[in-house]
Image (tube, rainbow, N blue to C red):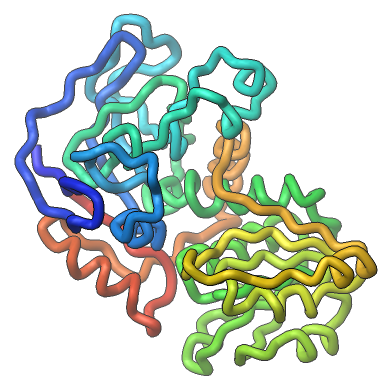
Length: 334
């Protein structure tokens, strides 16, 4: 099979021919129907993920169709459409038993310790699998593990949203931001989308209730109302304004970290006196994935796709990710 392989630390990636994978007792083999590019890929290639083993197949977001099942696999069969979590939990530890697989002590990350999904076929542990409901588009399903389901869990961890609550999303035109708007609205929120582009604002207005253009957005946000939840998909460039946007008792779900080399000086007094909560967040559990797949199947989340590339054309996909004019997510169709 063809696959995108990272040969070593900071050595880039290359298209290679690999033997087709074979399932272990507790694994399945899928045909990759769609995978998705992510800004995380670029950070991995820069060496910010120290647990990566090499060589490794890149890519951590996938939807596919099962072609083979291991002898111990129960509940899944050939022909099932599935997605995978971003990681493989052991399925037995105390966290797995209470449905918090994201905190499993023995979890292994796809595209880190385990081969990922930029390939024609992929091997997945059964503990990672979630069935995709019939009628769910591949383009929507592939977004769940690292985008919509992740956002859904982040909102849940922050305390959920009240109907009509005012939520602000930074980086609103990005692959995460444009879908964060939709998840928050599906849960009953009113949403402000923040962007730096007047052109992108025209598209964001199709999804958000309000749009603010500019890097200094906190004062404009306050004029709209009391923002009590910020989903920050950018990081240090927006974090200060995100904090300033919040009314007392508000919270930030911090997802973005576009430049991990930057350090933010946090004034504790500001957090304490405004009674703010900061929730760092990165993944989803099976329950979050199932809930978000249902919302997607119902049409409450519509995938926004900037483009789809082949494995042979993956360079073009990464150019799209870096393109400040693109809106939405970039997919791979092997």
